[in-house]
Image 1 (cartoon, helix red, strand yellow):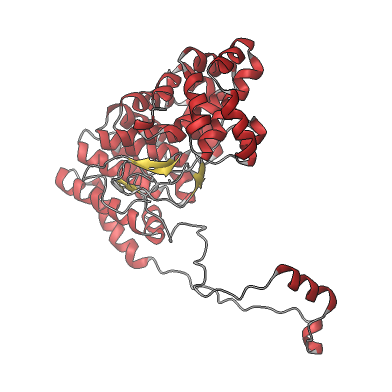
Image 2 (cartoon, one colour):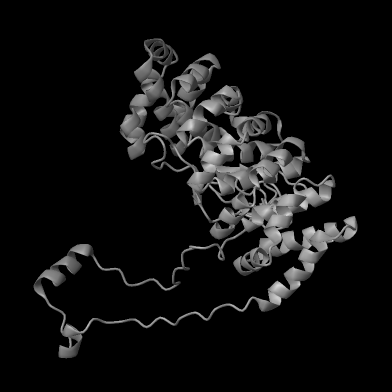
Length: 422
């Protein structure tokens, strides 16, 4: 993604770390030069909004999985807030310019007073104020920010949009590359590019037979998708099916950024439904099993978000995702937390529980409860809870694999959520 993947550079240039974002803080794999042009930013296991700085491919891969009320109150969830940082080839790198980012804290520390002292003072001593101050609320004036003048940027973008329409391949390659880079840098550029009508043309270029044009177009869309209004505009432009085409037929970098873009779009609930019904899940599962390290992380992040919508869970199971997820729970793959988060969601349906049992998921879930990260332990315990509650056979298997000691330890020293699941 140029826009929001944690592993690659900002959506277009996610940094070259193959897994940086948050499902397991969803990290980023290495990035190819074309896609990692910017600095990376998704993510820990995905924050409300895994957006990874899409350098080109893994913008959201590093998003953090956070527990949220999705389809299932017990399901784990990736946070999808826009603190995109994937800069390895997917260029999502919105940091400070991402909408909704919190202001920088002041560098000066305020004096600290013992809380009891403060309480005592507040109860026994009224602070003297002038009469006028007692009755009139204090108003802190806030300067209204002047509207940003986008005319200069839009003039440049209109020229590039004409290049997108050119029949000359070199001109078209240069134009898509320039738009991708502009979309990577700041929110004003993303707004200007959308205002000039570039989104519809970029969506059409996803079908290009030229690999460079296709890579630039998907990465540009990834970067543009950092803006919430652009998410809607990209989906309304009919981008989902062309993104699936890239996911099935593109270069490794294009596939990564396509998965990251689908993740970014799936932050909107309606898009979770449409992406699942459009046939994206099977190619995402294929990328999960056979993609590059960054591609696998981007696929896992997208599948996690899609699995929040109940209807998609069985699609993910039927596409064979559980086998790949269990394999990716090998610590060497660097994706344990991401894989466990998806399995915890899939364990909420009968088909998911059966697949986890058949694919050898119980021993590895027990191992994560014992040795995993705090978030991994929570999600592993949640998955085991579903398995044990609904099947005496699975309960016996969990006990046979020595789950009791680590579960007891988790009940005593785990996070509040983990304790609930034990």
